[in-house]
Image (cartoon, rainbow, N blue to C red; front, top):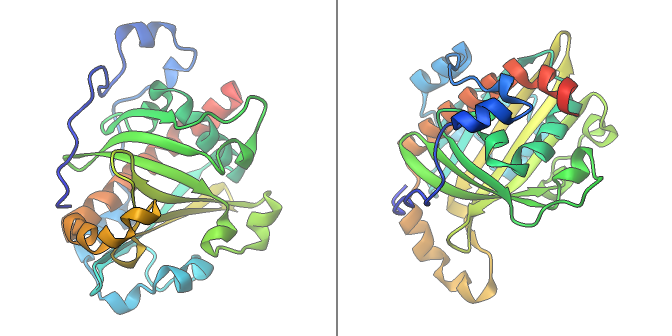
Length: 274
């Protein structure tokens, strides 16, 4: 990515303090020793980038997540977009746990850091969800502002959670909210009024847990200004962003790391905190 990475903000850091380790009620879930990425993710890194024709645009792909020809891999398209596909097996995790997690983790930086101890720096709600909300209502329609490293680059992202159908993801199981869920968002920058693209994490129950299928459509035609006066600057923004194969690889690895790690503690955390 050509846009200069922001500098860490004062008081924001990787890791937990000794005080946090001694006092937070979920401290037993802090584990900076992370497992390796999945074998599928390793193969995806080795075999990517792949042919653009294997990665349909979001409008076509989002309704066909489970049956996509490429489940693990990435491409950079001729119009400057970055498409990343990844599957993560999540033993003992249910879709309800995933919805709970996405409504819970941005309440404090320490919660967000549980997810990826080596890369997550800070998280906060742009406007906190009201007390008493639960499930998807706890995060859909709200924006999580996060500081995290993708590879060695610090990103300050605005994760604007949306209803799945707003992105075109229509799934009866997701709508019922029992055997499946889908976490969908518009992804932008905190420091600039620019949106980079979209993400979707489709989670479906299988024997022994769930399978998460993650999809990212970033840059190129997915990039847009958040305000009308800036829309004329979009062509310039596209040139400045300039997503690369290194960016795609970093995103795929990061996603595999954080989702694999999340599955190791989420069932017990959900039992304790929900």
